Image (cartoon, rainbow, N blue to C red; front, top):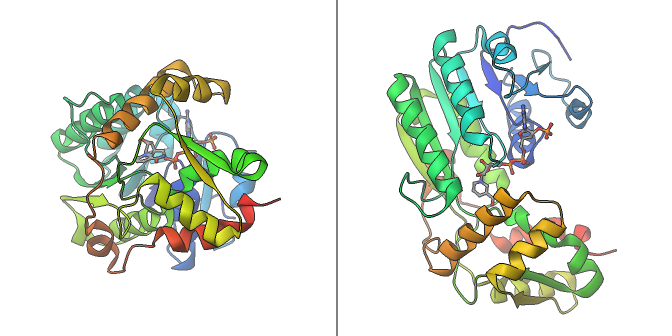
Length: 295
Ligand SMILES: NC(=O)c1ccc[n+]([C@@H]2O[C@H](COP(=O)([O-])OP(=O)(O)OC[C@H]3O[C@@H](n4cnc5c(N)ncnc54)[C@H](OP(=O)(O)O)[C@@H]3O)[C@@H](O)[C@H]2O)c1
């Protein structure tokens, strides 16, 4: 891995769910890029990337000075943080630093239905940052994915141990999306000017209830998997138990209340528009990840 600073594309969140897929996508296409990681220990996950011109650098959203340094010379940046109480502040610092450094185009990982007036805190902060990027004068592409299919991996333990997964969504439908499709949309937006000024709603090709997801999972795994609908309060307690902060757990409960209203059920053509390819299905996901849901 080269340490020189020659690439014109910067990837943040490179060690996360979407970022890792994006790193693979760009490497497969032999596109040089710089990946920002907050700890070089975490960069071990990216060691398979041996493409000349790929740079792994240390940078922290909570350290605006480090950001300025990492952004120097960059033309296009992919902006992703995890959702926490700090996300709005972190992303604001990044956008300001990018504008000062002369970045031309930001591809922002946002969320389906981002809106400053949403009752869902994640959707409010994403909308605030989208607006800030628009006001900065930099070109933008906003990727607004629906619930990630890979979120089911959060229930890996209960699916393995008790053949169950949980949610507070009842029988409402949701058009979940595969993280590889989000990464492909980001990769295309970072490597072509055709996506400037675009907002892509990213969904899978179908809208499923969690009961239907359980049926598909059962078929792929060859054993009965049950979806258990729980109350919002039980969902919150479960999320706190597995390590989410209060702010995040309450945010996820808000997310599920919005899903339960059927507000994330529509199937959109964003993946095809951004990538030219059909979105991956939930069947594809469960077959791809089947081994991870069994001992
Ligand atoms: N999950 C869903 O269903 C869903 C749906 C729609 C939209 N979204 C949005 O997707 C985003 C999360 O994407 P994801 O799941 O790919 O995230 P993730 O797996 O949680 O990864 C977060 C990334 O941010 C990095 N990071 C965290 N704090 C940092 C800091 N202080 N400085 C530098 N890097 C830092 C992490 O690095 P480390 O590896 O060092 O921790 C990691 O690479 C959120 O904005 C969320 O709103 C999620």
